[in-house]
Amino acid sequence: MKLKDFYRLAVEVGIKNDPRPREEIERLLQEEKKAFEKLEAGEKENFDRDRLFNPFGDSRILYGDPETEVSRILAGIDMDAAEILLAYTLNRDADKKIDLVLAHHPSGRALAQLSQVMALQVDLLTSFGVTPSVAEQLMEKRIGEIERRLLPVNHNRAVDVARLLNLPLACLHTPADNCVTRYLGDLFREKSPDRLKDVLEILKGIPEYQNSSRNSVPPRILSGSENSRAGKIYVDMTGGTEGSKDIYEKQAAAGISTLVGMHYSEEALEKAKKANLNVIVAGHIASDTLGLNLLLDQLEKESGERLEVVAVSGFERIRHL
Image (cartoon, rainbow, N blue to C red):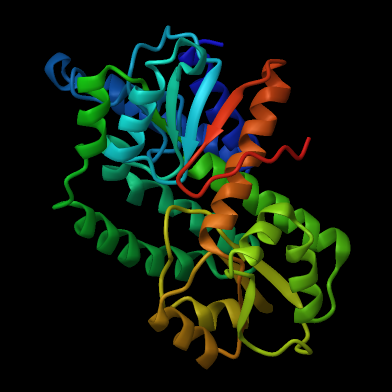
């Protein structure tokens, strides 16, 4: 399929798996269209027009002709200069030609806009019973922190390498994270694990976490014990990056007992413990791999085309559909 179709379809899959109601996403896109229409002609030139159909600022075609035919992808979690040079080297062999370098983690303008997708966490929190005003105010502060932290970053390092080597480069972050969040949330609701050891057993039955365990990075309990009751489980794996560190008492008050996430900072973990929450870290790269696999699965299903994927940078292609 063409790169533009691959990208548009990935965005649509991300929307289908988004924890927010479809109507909320449509409302946000309409707001972007209204904002665009109010701009002067000169201002419109600098407007990121992907925002008119893509609610995920951290997922973009970073370089390349949208008309490029894509059948063979070099995919990984972090795709920097080394991985792009690898694609260039592979392209010396016509039988190994890479049409697209696909990253999970954002770079370029997608990294610069990472903080924009964090508002998604507000909707996820309120769906679990956290008061909307509390979630909004706490997340507003955290979003500001991340936005300021990203200001001095050298966003375009990898993009510049792709441009000089004329290799299409894209990143799909929140669409993949939405897929893993939806998948695990549905799985936990279906299986209703009673204890934390049961949650671990479910995770360890998933190929990506099995592989991670073989590499000495298994899902593990950071707060609570194997026999602790799981209660209401909150899957904390989408919304850009780690949320507010002051949210944990509010989650406990909303009836959440167990957090299952990709990673937790020491400060966040200590605050979760003080709120008497159980915490399971499923694993960062394993969870990202699962999300990207689920996204690629649905892309293939929706398009009816099978993509050839060369996996690097912590990623392994495993089909679930």
